[in-house]
Image (tube, rainbow, N blue to C red; front, side):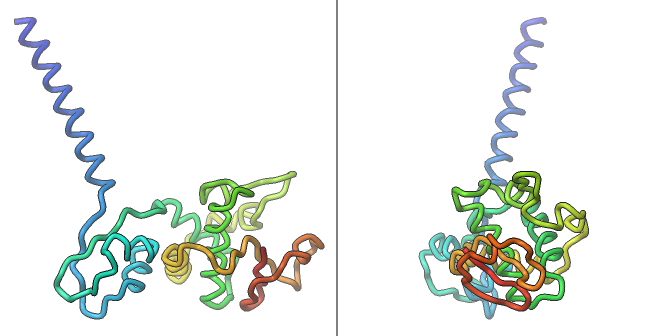
Length: 198
């Protein structure tokens, strides 16, 4: 009787382990999506927040035909990271044009890719160096306010772009910036009240 109980416990444990592995593997797998009328690689990439290059590669750049299925590759950014980035975009780019919001998100994504900064969105957003926060909204608490729909959309678009944006790693408002160092950086783009630089 003891041996049967031990075998039952071992078998149950094995089943739980196999099930856990199977469920974990399924959530990490790419998914299929039915192509809708009017879909483009860009529209799908920005809607789901995946790099357009990854989406095209997963689907071998084939024509999108309504009713057929396409592969949605694994997301490169978690929902929590998207939320954090969207909250930063909202706080940093209130009153700025939509393109400026996308550019703020691109700066963060470019920093993640750069060896000069932390290699995660959370690490970049919350970075503190020599006693100073990289982003004022982290210091003053504005980061804790929920993101608006436009900021969320801007984050998805920045992810779809795969970062880049002329390689911008910084942005500032020339009317309020007090640092001579930041104003000495090479300007890559000006949108609204922000200058983007590298």
